[in-house]
Image (tube, rainbow, N blue to C red; front, side):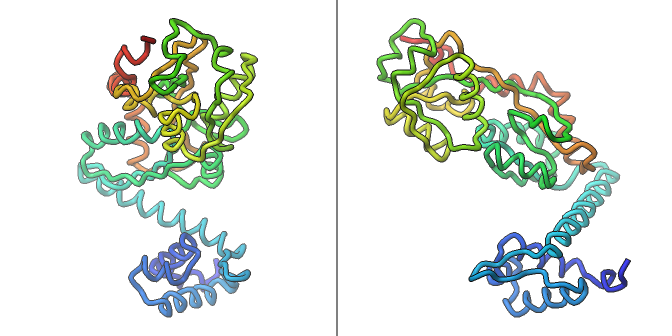
Amino acid sequence: MRKSLMRMTLRQLQVFRAVCETLSYSRAAEEMALTQPAVSLQIRQLEELVGQPLFEYVGKKLYLTDAAEALQRASTDIFGRLDSLDMQLSDLQGSLQGQLNLAVESSAKYVTPHLFAAFKRLHPEVSLQLVVVNHAQAVKRLSVSRDDLLIMSQVPTDMDLEFMPFLNNPIIAVAPAEHPLCHAATLSLQDLTSYPLLVREPGSGTRKAAEDYLRQKRAHFTQTIQVASLDALRECVVAGLGLALLPRHAVHLELAAGLLRELPVAELPLYRSWCVVHPRGKRLSPVAQAFFAFLREERAQISALAERFAGPPTTRSAS
């Protein structure tokens, strides 16, 4: 190993990681409670130790060099191991402590906080850092092992991953409360196709699952309206702009309040499973191991919790 690398300090790496995250010396200075010259000095010292530039400007935008990307991966591993050490020392003292870095697909963001709250009741000194992403972003994060664990619905088959299904993710058809289809006793997917269909942005796991299923059932919608977020899409349905295929967990409040109705479509719900995922061979922290074990062993508690998101029976039948 180069002797110069042994002179790196954890503080320098913390400042470096802040610049990598913000892509700005001034914002990194604010985050680290330092002056901008102090941040610049720490980066210059790191570049001397590495022997290569770490950042470069193209126009007014800051980019990581190849050396910076390599150092970023190494620093992630270093701080990850320190976090793991902290958790292991806490475990030896008889209590689980530390932070769970968890990424979830956007339609899982409604149930995940309740899962973590149940977990935290068992381990009150554990904290959570939660990132919400779409399916495409989730796959990218898995490829670089960005998070401790990730919750997603459609696990990529072309990656070397460990995963465990732990909860059903029913996708249903919803309409505004006064929509003509709400009065039908039973419907087919074909009955829906004459109305506009609201869809998520490309890269959404719910959109991909719905599109694949509609293609399989030969249900072709002549008019679709793309909406960039799940929350905005849900409001568009309430406003009467069209129908949508959405996870029941994501609309349980609107169903319970009568703002939306679940349409009685014979071919639905479309069932997918929420899975907890990590790259195969990844060294899980004690907190991540405990959360994975919680999802595996507390199926009854998780199923009971998920029932809260199913909506009352009256919302699942037409009037």
